[in-house]
Image (cartoon, rainbow, N blue to C red; front, side, top):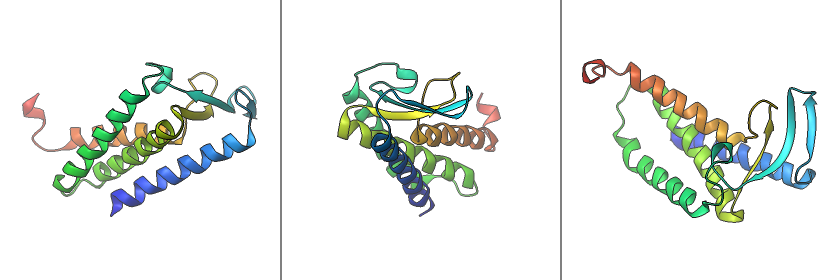
Length: 149
């Protein structure tokens, strides 16, 4: 249940924020929120993170679908006692679903969070990155992992 709540929460915030940007900004517009630090900048990203592998929409859709199927299979088998592991997976699922919906609908991902020193990204990307961070944190804390290194 927690997985669905977190995933749907990330997905909703991601999609509503993208819709707001699409409806209120022209492509390429950049609105300073904190001058020279943080802008809202509307860009279309046909690639992956940092715009790598541009125009590989089919590949990204396939990867996202495989990820979601793997989560559906493995999530019920996760060990108990690691709530951050489950939260991290929920964040990743919500982020992957948000960017997957964009790619299916338009062939690209809408990005708009611009810290000026980093490529422009979106809420789904935040969910994915935070989720991966929590996943790694919990995996390295699991007992019995040190002797397998």
